[in-house]
Image (cartoon, rainbow, N blue to C red):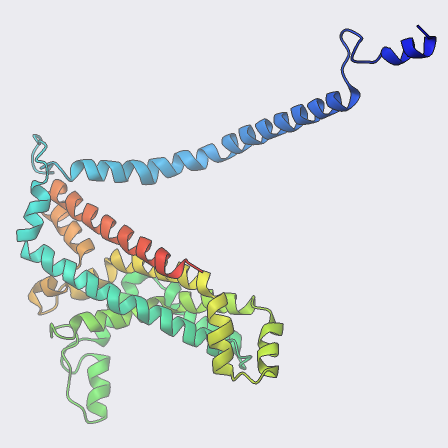
Length: 325
């Protein structure tokens, strides 16, 4: 055999213990990449494990404990308790106070959430139009949100005070109108509290939507104006579609906040002439009454479970409606 043929037949593959250079490089590359990925996974695990553990401790475990208590007759007034199954949930159907609280909560959510979202968008659009003293307007809108809830509720309770002692009735009389029983008339008492809630939380949504409007490229509005679009049309066809993620966030946050409203209703309804606030009770107040006033933690946990499931269902529906493109 010729020397050239012999040398050609001798390759790196025919030599024991050797590999093809390209294949060896690829294997080494994938090996390094795999080790990097494993290292990243380990780093992320150890970096986020405290956060995940804290979330499980303060969120997941209490929810599971709450659901487990909801099927018991656990009470703070006695040591012995047992599993009663769905008896607490059956009791809700016959509990007129729970039915009233559920109705009031749904009314509160149905009126307050659209109010804060629509008014928040409206004021954000108006402020975004390069108004003078824009910073002052933002401060005035956001100031009620950062005020403490209890003092704010007490102030508004004084504004709604019956007779001539309340500021609202004083203004009505000054313009020749009759006094209104803001917190003592069951027909308008809940609306009065909702008005205070909207005033308290509106500034947060104004700022959130205003930040979203500031991040929309000006070229889009400029192109719409060149095409002959009015400011209302530009807002409707450009700003609102691009603000959909923020609208979804605001709607979900407002719904959860309204579902769990407690302090405003509790402070403003206690001590009124409406049967000590019974007609104004909501689910969160009902949970407090059953759990800490009467000691029925099992029944209170069942009410909390219903509130949690209703809020979860509302959020899922909102994601299905507002989250899709």
